[in-house]
Image 1 (cartoon, rainbow, N blue to C red):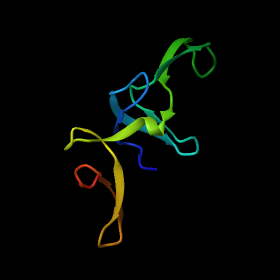
Image 2 (spheres, one colour):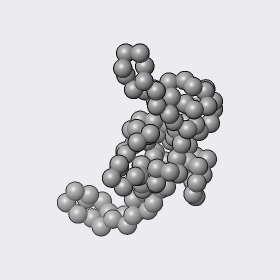
Image 3 (spheres, rainbow, N blue to C red):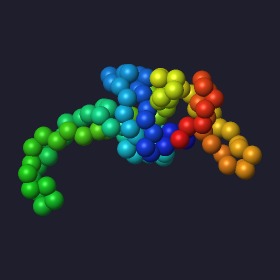
Image 4 (tube, rainbow, N blue to C red):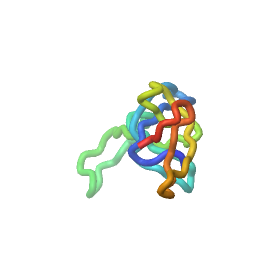
Length: 103
């Protein structure tokens, strides 16, 4: 997958288009990611042993990985990701726009 946990991404499609956020979790089996502050849903929670206080809870829902792009600070926009092998044999991700190694 071209997106990892901790990456800053920009949403390119859907109701949260053009929002940026940090990837909290990657779900590779479902090809989905959970992004901080994106695709917020409300859940009506009953009180139980774990959550003594019930009520309406807001949290992030997964979005499809094709709807996000890695955000490059130097290009100041979302970029496509390529892979490159360095001289020491290490495989790294690079920005297709700037050619810089993504951290």
